[in-house]
Image (cartoon, rainbow, N blue to C red):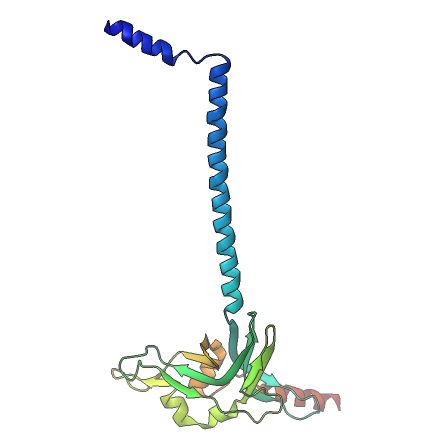
Length: 229
């Protein structure tokens, strides 16, 4: 009896053959295909939402590129060239922003001993005519540069010794500290970038490299004028 019942069950299960079994296989195939299509559609929808959110957040994010380095200003009227610190700001985002002030940051940590702790100083406005002094607006794709007379930093020994250098407790003399330039923006956290290495050396030493400053340029220009005459 048991064998007959089992055999009868198997016969009933295997009875789907020919057109009926083909139809069942097609139903299973298209059901699976539809499920895969729904999954792909759900993934595509989620990806579209993520991209839309990313674009929206990118449009709202303020992106300011800031750099600071030593440059020369050559007037072109025969007057001597001058050394300046050029602080350039570029709005590489899609939102306009207002620059409130330019500042310097030295040191390594926000807390700690004096010789490691960060210090901040606001850069006063320049008297150089070509300089863009804050506050000013910076629209998307716009670039503005503030020019500061480098001689101011040469003459201020106290600033160089206590702000751009640190006196270490375990050795004599002073040692240079990292120098960063900052742009304070209205309603947004400041934009920060490390100064170029040549500018760092100048701010910590008070001297411009022998072959890279206005003195060398003016000397060469004067020599050429004498030779030409």
